[in-house]
Length: 414
Image (cartoon, rainbow, N blue to C red; front, side, top):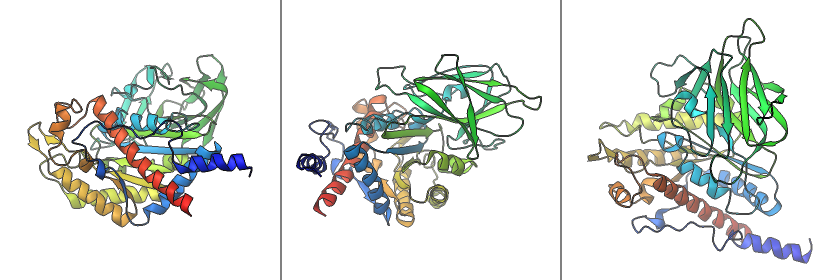
């Protein structure tokens, strides 16, 4: 290695503040418990995170590789404000880590709120199924939600860059859908060029497409090529490219509990197809919302979910986030969120996961009032404003950087 390259490598390893003066996000609120804003490792989870940080180091230092992140949650995640801020932070804190958009779901096709960082247009009549339904009559996958059409005039258009955000594009597409002889044939166009591209079916439950160029618009329609074909169900869409970087996917369903994702029978198959290195589970608000809270059942269900994830991805790093402070019926402080956080830590300790204690970081019990006064939370005392979710994304990002900084310091000393 040349002397100049050695110096560059040493500078990069010293701290990760080479993209700006400091990559850490400023937190201008005195009610935030910054000293508690850390990722706590339980069991052998630190080993999984060392593997994650090693891959991140390689990406930053050599410009090689992709790191896939997946956040799973409820309404706090479906709108993609918290997770979207994490995505923006992770994809911009160092040079060369801007990745593609990854897995997404066309939520407004299911008549529910869509993230504002991609736009969805559609035609035709669609029927939706969600993991919060008590009596499911459908298969569900990673997204926890699916849409079905019986109309060949139906279509879905995804526009990746509707706002002033860092430009993202794709040249690789995966359409997650049901399989079989009764399924319509997928028709994917390169952007809106009118040029159709052929796909390859995969046993993991998706059809993959590769385009000749990079695009930021996807047009998906359907063809009936056999008399047996009568419908198709879409479970999600993955938009990637070959560029090195961090790919941050997020899935959420309004009202979801941990048990909701246990209903998703295609979860393992889709997890293997997506193959993330880091999974963040942000659930518990709905589980602990009511007056009575069965923490034993909650622990059992969360353990089942973690086991299913690890069966599919044995080496994945898992982070559990505790539910935020909230109120019931806008009036009553909810101590069950404390119990849910304690249960999450117990599960993490037994199942080798890490924990980010959002409840504690935001100020603890009844801190929701301070967030509301600061314009960071809404009047329902459960959900947050866009500004509040962005703050959560900044806080988790800072906690992640602290851990990564520590890994770099240990690596340099050794």
